[in-house]
Image 1: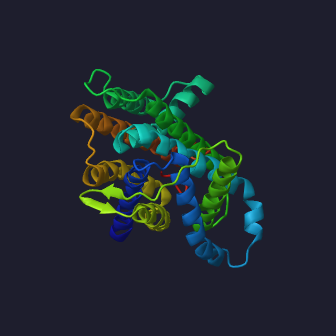
Image 2 (image 1 turned 90 degrees about the vertical axis):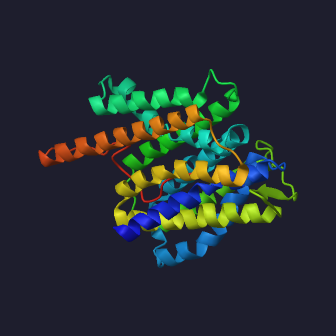
Image 3 (image 1 turned 180 degrees about the vertical axis):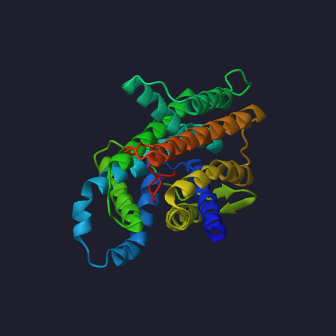
Length: 324
């Protein structure tokens, strides 16, 4: 348990680097689409070999789970990361990530509207707490105005994350997690290159030096950090943590990514949300924790009574989370 917790925290720490590495590239003239495409392509190539090894010749698993791989690549990888990077280009890294972590709240509100059934008290309280945190994060009365377009990009990323949770709650795939991660990255990269080739996605690359903390580094340092640390190591360690702790516990620990992202942005970009926004971040994360705890508690209670409970989008936790 202790080693699994350490791996999970390491995964959150390196995932939290993605916003800082990406923003250092965006500030030199890279477009969000170019940063995402380079990240997905590089990571997909590196993870291809271990993915093939994990299949052990069982190629039929790719055919049996092709829809899961495609949906994960389109929604959980390509769209989620592209929207997040667009948000990072206009907002601070911490604010952009906090907006994306509103996905569980979106799920609660959607299920409430669709079923006309009022959420349980703890879920309703967590939702209200997160919405109050959102108001503080946006800091509408503060001196620094938050970019509305950036907020919309962040909310779009949250919607993608919510859709991913719906997808994994309904799918029961038998694919090894490293294969799902690699396959999703390949699909995401292919989609990005196709969108660029058709002119739908602006692509801009530069070789200008990037600034990371007190250091001025070549552009490839930030790109290598984005690919190797914030993607390959992050996904691999995240899968290891899910196996050691269980995917549900690991998904709770992954919430610490917000804290790491804010810390890295402060150290590498000199970027720190205001005190009001930090308080809002605490409320958002606290609300998400309450919603998840209530969902798992309700499932455990029904299971103890012997009732058949269908998996809900929040109760089901996948070994491969679409963390940005």
